Image 1 (tube, one colour):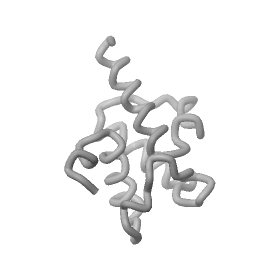
Image 2 (cartoon, helix red, strand yellow; image 1 turned 120 degrees about the horizontal axis):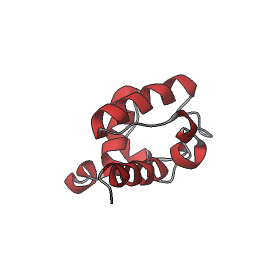
Image 3 (cartoon, rainbow, N blue to C red; image 1 turned 180 degrees about the vertical axis):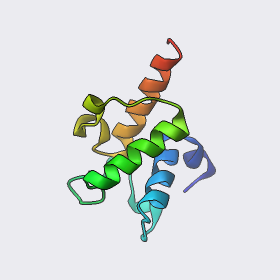
Length: 92
């Protein structure tokens, strides 16, 4: 993983997944488009932990109705959601 990747939103999400879910395989296997729920990487409890960590790390509030596969199905979708939420919080 490049330094640039760890500073991108997707890279930061990947780091959270590795730490919070104690991912034992290579972080490179967690590609931006890998289906997290369908591949049993994230379950309901780990999703709650992930949401809590994202809120803390990115300084955003995630509404319950936003915790759906469309927003949390892959690292790429999560990153897009976080970037959008951060933009909305800044009034952009």
